[in-house]
Length: 329
Image 1 (cartoon, one colour):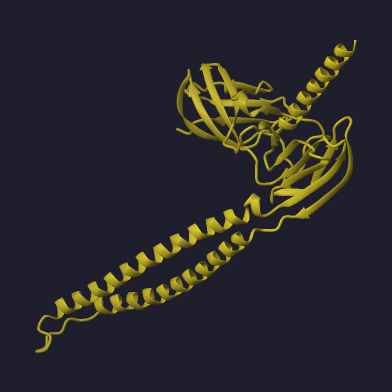
Image 2 (tube, one colour):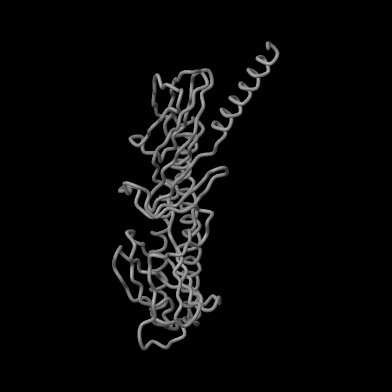
């Protein structure tokens, strides 16, 4: 009995370890809304401590931490993350360079006005022959050309300075959003020492924009599909898309689908040709029987599987109808 009992205990411990590993290795779950994202992480403790980094865009008031069965949360501390010294130095260098470029652009603007006036003055001169100036037209042309050449040099220098300013501003914005140097640290102590929790929060820097496909399969058969537009996805994330606002989410999941599912046919929208419309890509009457509103977005237009271009879907409120033409041509 003793060897069997020992093997049983080792096997049970092994499966418990596997279960714990599967929990801790599970990737984050992200639900993208039209105006933000709800993020959920599975976290496991090491020696009773769990540390979580909240990105700068996370709404700290939305942070929730739920213990899994068998785990007790003893204490939670949230503290702001301190930006790194190198980041502060780089930001300071960028701001100094931006100030210098602003001063240069101001000086170039003054030079621009001077040479504009000089070019105007030269071109407005009346040519008068004198002994010292037998070719007045050539002199005027030379003076005008010089002023214009100086203007071109000013425009080139100004454009370079403005371009550098734009690049510096993008770099400064990226540094300000850098997750490694801002946001909040969350520390929580749990029991047992390998306890697990589910941490969730909302953040405003991720969302999705819906797009559509209108397909005419036969002269009287139409389909309107909802397709994901462009959105960010990190490795290991499980992403779903919610056709609702993060600010006012529905009490229960509304129109939600997995990001990987591709085009989703909108069965609750009834499409039909307008009477008397005989065009190849007709105006379609769309009647909504859905509880969801469908926001405006780009729409791709297909006839018998052939792509014909894009249009703009104006959006449709729940229970309403509209007349819509995919191609305005």
